[in-house]
Length: 323
Image (cartoon, rainbow, N blue to C red):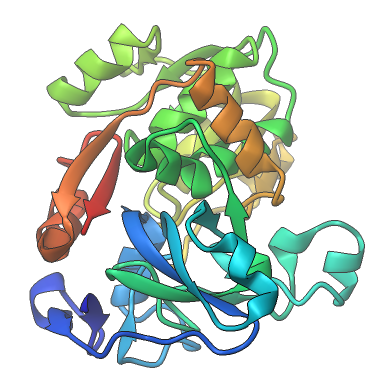
């Protein structure tokens, strides 16, 4: 099968390769999923650059995926064969203190696809049978948006009260686009920052305002960029407001004065992923056309180009790989 392998850390051209590797075979308790669509996340780029010590190349990248189960490793799961499923991006242990409290997104021992084990940039992926979930009624290229980026937006917006609030989303990439849509759906007056005329047209058509220089005093700011924009996000927030940090695309450290937070009593919240059931809410929003699926499609063999386009900021919505 074809797979996009991370061979070493670095830039896309030197670190990624499309290779023919042996087809995997499921063991008892596992299923083999034929991937129909895989999402390209900003985290994949951070992984590729070597920001996470637990990642040991070579490994197949990607943690967002949907597809059909084509083989089960034991009779126990034969009934799953033929079903279309979404893949859990992380395998939670279910027993740590956070999992027991219903906070699986903070599991101490989570094993991530594309990091701890081979991921979704491939024609086939092996998965534990209890970490694939059937769905229907949504095109796979749209459904893959519900495996990470949309449920993450749903969970992040749930962290703060946005109804009738003035909200800014910093970063006009895929995460920002869906954060803005979810916040608008929850009753916020939403603006998004982007320098791209093409993206501005897409966002405006969705009823999302475009941030202009001189705007300030937002009730809530969602920062999807991280260290390069964190200080400005705090400065754009009104006294007593909230900043939700949901991304760090460079993997770098941020440097800022605590006085910015203290003297204006800003609440700064970090946000990580989502709860498992948020995926079904995301799928429901897509089915009811309450969220517009916006993505740029690439062939699996074009993954390197997709990474480059994302780093240039030219991808509108999510980059989606199709084998």
